[in-house]
Image (cartoon, rainbow, N blue to C red; front, side, top):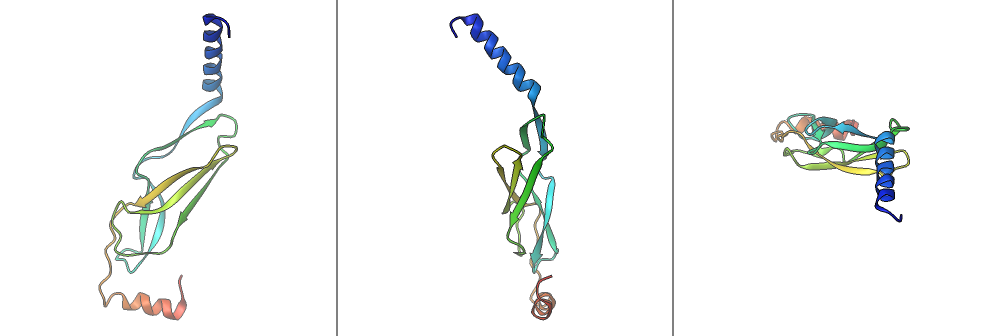
Length: 131
């Protein structure tokens, strides 16, 4: 572009295009439960999975609803579980855009069962397998 006026006009055109054709989509808030993860030998059967930071993506206005979300964890997790422990990865894949990976964390503490309390889950696993 040969003049300052042309560069300003082109920059304005690009900005207008961006604001008209893209929007920010807030997907998750911090500490908002994403899913539940089974806990082995825990005083609670599950622990909520949360994100620590807000998850917001800038997506095209057309096709912004076509998002695939996949949660990768190793289940069950063995107690004790401390709040804030990273337990998996959330993959957010909008159509036509590179996937975004966000770690998920334990949303609360889960204490371990006592030795006698662990007998029933152990027998259940040995007799019936994982459920």
